[in-house]
Length: 220
Image (cartoon, rainbow, N blue to C red; front, side, top):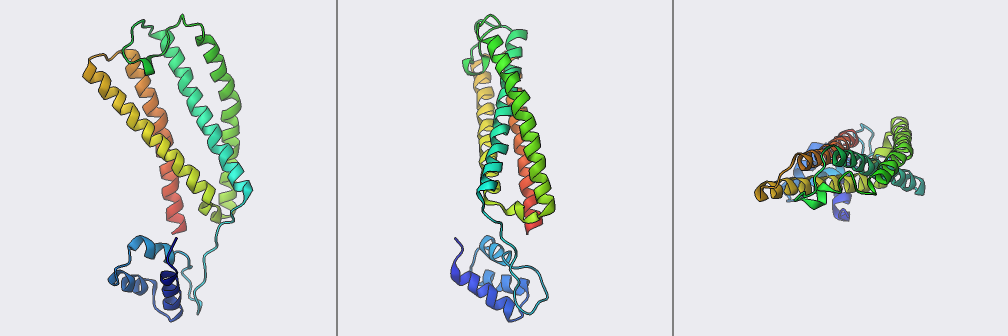
């Protein structure tokens, strides 16, 4: 939480007629961290009005939490089941009875659960992915109509949680590749599966990191 003294100083400084840059420099000279200074300055709009004008704050509503939980829940379902579907078909195309990296190799085409897994993945994608697209479009319209929605707490927390999951997935994927390489047990199926994970997790990370950068640029 930002310190009350810093908030009070910034408000009084702007009220006295000092520019934002002068206020920032005075605080930097006093040893305040730039991130805290910018965060407090962003509480006020750049306006020529005689007193500081506060920026609008996002409303923290239960609806926002619900909408973003549905958005990211359907995203996780869609990505997971798309990966599972690709894995199942790779198991069929590249059968291997003795795959060294068991966590990524999975069962061969004769495994009795393969067909069931394919059906479940397709059913999940048919239901979850259109819901994800619909909710994404709904949120996009909300943001276009009122940019303050970019500051939604639920939006930021769940987006950064998703980025963390994607980042750890990418790290784990690279560790698996290096482990297989050092073990000398790399197979075509293993490489294709690690590439699939890398593409799926990398796409999610790239998209939402770009989205957060846009949010920061617009709200700054």
